[in-house]
Length: 79
Image (tube, rainbow, N blue to C red; front, top):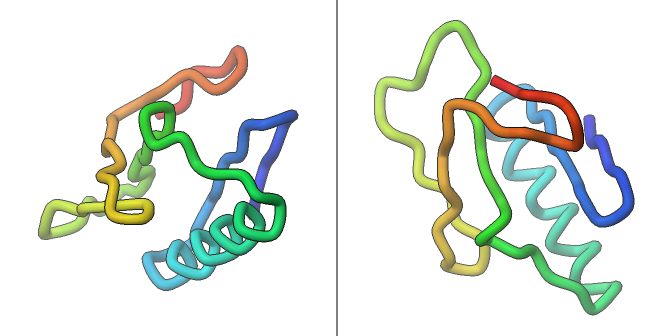
């Protein structure tokens, strides 16, 4: 699922494979619309009872994306 509001987008992947698919969709959207992801404002939060055994590393076009425990989206505290 994808939640969007104006220029903000939240991706809710079911697993790591779904995450890759959603990231490709966002990259394609950005390419078609001549826009980009601001990695300084982009955060990733792992919301799952079982945390991964190995640290997750995420990037967008080679730029690292920060993995956080919680963040604010609009007026909601997520995490």
